[in-house]
Image (cartoon, rainbow, N blue to C red; front, top):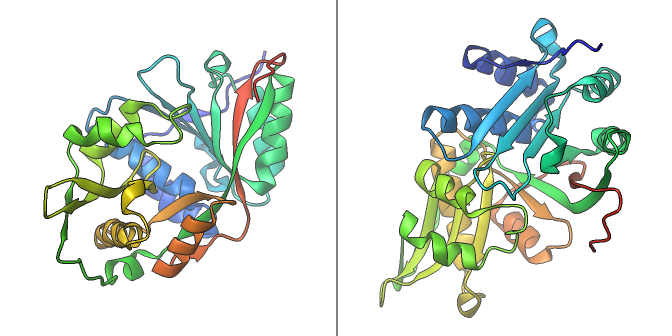
Length: 292
């Protein structure tokens, strides 16, 4: 019988784990870092979603971590974020193969897997009797908090920027392209608990574009309504949200599909830096699944 080596991380250990361990591999660890920070923030505020954060308590400095985000909608997969510091991949492999904390019946989504860990996760999924499907390969873009805090932009006279409210969730969700893996509750928590801003028309108050800091603590859900594109509203709202995050001491980061040239160009234009290696999202499927 295997002994479970992972324990739930108490909030009292968060600062050491994030600041002294994960920061050693900065910015490669940025996704795990802000996933953990956001998890404790949301748990304190009674979010609709729930987090479980696991680490090896008697060997904290190796940076091995598994975080699980569960949403209230049963039909949606758990989100699993995994990380270990460079050089600890073999220990990570042994831990991943032996742990019982992952609910395989929920067909989890492994989010933002570092390239050096991807093969380990894929092999483990196969060993559990499932198959892995590549959902997306991401380019991670990020910006130091002090740079984001100094961003300067002009707001055109015909629009204004303000915080989003839950009244806009239905409209926002209708244009969200990743509804297959991210439910409406994700937006509900994000709008209520994190930074979320919109560009509004001064003429009629219509919401034209928006962006927010999501469940993993990074910038997400950047959308400009189709009829208002090519007017600079995407860049404007990215700068506005990034500046608020930077002023709060957060280094904003975003996961952008490697083929999304428009978004990659926009974030380059704002001043975001490129992460050095790709990150992958893997979806767990039944072995006989024939879905495209």
